[in-house]
Image (cartoon, rainbow over all chains, first blue to last red; front, top):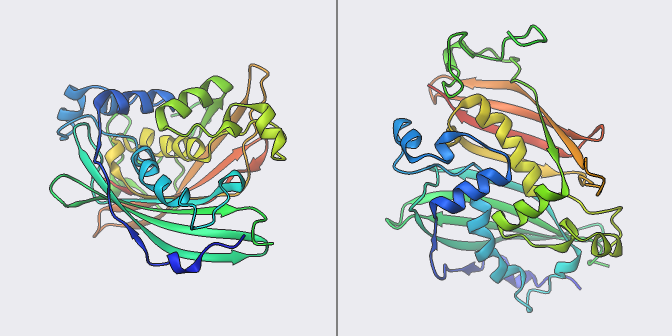
Length: 149
Length: 159
């Protein structure tokens, strides 16, 4: 089933904030084998000029995913999630994510395309801090294999 | 000097592990220290929990083969995270990576044989912007002899 093209340009405004905990950053860093003390030790992070331990560059996906789920599981969009693979991903960090951040995230449906038999959905995710300033912009393309018939 | 006789790009001989390379010491074409990361089923489970991505194709062979995959595959975002590690281990500070993008071109198959997959990352300084204080690093990320990420690029802010 093709995706509903009327979703292009639609904004899914942020829901409940994502609070970045120090143990979540440590858990994420440990999961990828990253022992950088700036991601584990507040003293090392402070010495490097940060107000809290710093998340590895791809940690943003842990926050963004919760908000993207509202879009990809919207039944009216028509995405068959069982056939979805990740096509590409980009993070633009306006500043690093640090422990203690209270983030919100607006999701914008940037593009819906059909390439061959695949449906492509491109989402832009705007993570902002409690001060309303941008933190990270994520671009994700999801590919539903074979769903465009 | 490394065992291969190559000084990692821009790293001062007296520098500690967290001291960043200096932008002024870099030349386009410099290589980052190559890195290899084993990816086992255990790591997939840990990453699933840490990231919140519990898609069963990353831990359940029955589901993975049921949708036509050869076996359980790694999260694309885990491969991207390991590629980023090669950059942050070099740059010293995870906050130095201000822009990072990849295409997921091939799955990383992780067999349940106690060894899993081995992801190798090499990087090259591809562009320098002294006014912006940034270096662009292009990465080649391979598993089982084939590239698994395409157009993997990081923009890194360096002193």
